[in-house]
Image: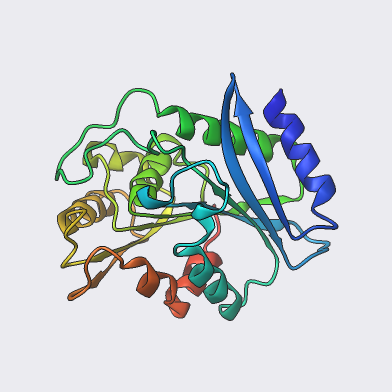
Length: 248
């Protein structure tokens, strides 16, 4: 119930404030959240974007998650012609992860249940969709970098019906779960010289997903190490294709 109350509060305040610092709360667990309502008042339904940060931006200040990658992405969204949208940037606590996985491993198996930050986030978005008719549910998108790239792959495996398109950057996932994603378009990015998350992780996920989904793409950067998100989020044509995707 507290999640639902939060969302109602957000949309009342959104008319007067372009940016809100809030929390998602579920079963005593609290997740900091920065919200952006871009473009002010708008009569049509709004696209929704979920942004999942990396490990270095974990914490409780509700600020760090907005500093890496997100500014570049929002500039490119504007350049690509997206003038009105809602964006959520939640912050994972310092001692938690979006996914319970070894980032350096090539293989991993998705756990039966999500981590509690992912669970709180998923419940919050479920409530948003159920209680907010101003969100265009055919234009919901998820973007994540590094730890957030893993979170992106896991989210679309657990709820393949939720997002029209996903953009996991230097992440990875459980290839056995790729069969679930028959609908969500995917634009995955990875630097071939990545020394933190193996490039092969994105290759394996993309190849596995292509077996059930034709709208899946891998963009590789030959000489880029782990920080491929700045190049990825600056790809205006790709971002335009990404936000043009609609859920059937």
